[in-house]
Image (cartoon, one colour):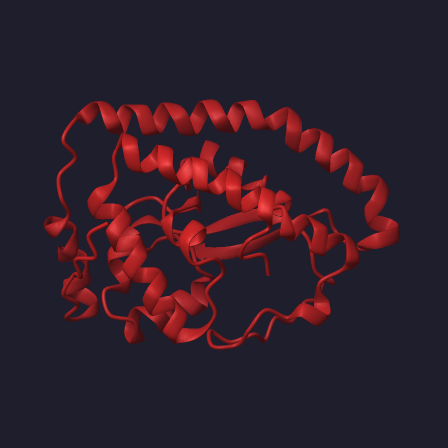
Length: 221
């Protein structure tokens, strides 16, 4: 795949990167992507309900605390939104992890490790898809405070916000979970490649690779 880099100049100029993106060859792709997102999200609702019921039973023993976890993430055009997941960590009112810190593994519960390994914790992201805040495929959104730092330190970072963030994407299936500035630089490069090359074939490859990743547990954190 081509690894053409975008030129990053300043925060304000980052939005002009959208003009450099390769236009989609067919408007049909946009309609397909929107329809695919909505259909998959609706089909996943019964699965989410079943998993939620199971967790309501198991959580008091293996993962005490609220069923869901909400966090402000940076979405399309740099707008904040509340991303929802099944909670996998010990609940806390004070989150102190900085943009350069690794995952707080000590806070991950026994049940949470299983949910994270097979990406079950991300199923509630489908609610964000239905609210038109996310897509099935796209750049994985970063925490709001972390994204503001990356926008200043990572070349071309804001280009990834010209499209809707995704539940899965090229960076997720190729690189896995990214920690710190260096890995975020690599993630942002893969996100830009995806944006330039998005189309029916690219979406299909990412879907197939996502299934492989889920079954193998690659990149779990």
